[in-house]
Length: 220
Image 1 (tube, rainbow, N blue to C red):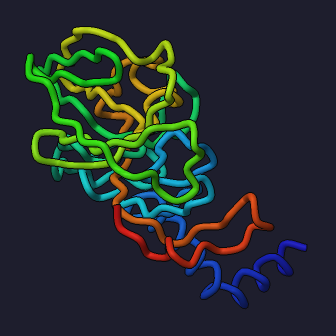
Image 2: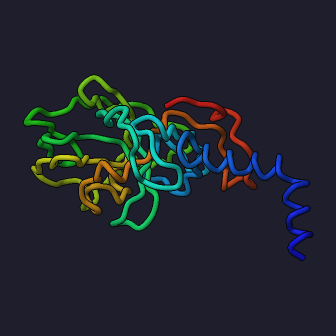
Image 3: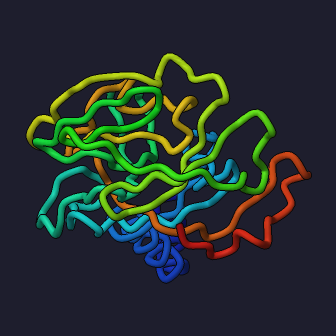
């Protein structure tokens, strides 16, 4: 039996090496993640497969969270993927505030270090129901879309709070429907595993899982 296993390994060593290298690549270099919820609408849609750059901030030991080399720190506006211990799952949110920043929210409007962010109304995006509002939020020069309920939720107000060292405040773009830093607290730097900036492809869960051609390789 042992001889049979050895022969099998020898006969398939190229394939096994490929699988091993692929696992290392996905663990430490880049990966793709499925987005199952709408917490980042309208930027990211349920069914999107997003590209995650795992070397955006750190060079890590494969299959661990151990950083071998620090390459950069998350910036305001970055969409980050992190393994949240508080939520006990992988989350994707937008970085709003950095260590040392003071931030608060009043009626879904953010104030950063005492200054209100600028907001501008915009037309509803594709797949948006009629009972929501979408706006452009200017995060100190980084403009992006957010979605709000017509009737604000209990998440519409918080703070002011000051972000501690080695932590970040991250929110979902779907502000009234996101379990983010308002629920799980600040995001530790060590939990952040990568940055995402594009959709690889997308499947429409409401239409027999057909591909959404308009979202193929779409940057956000």
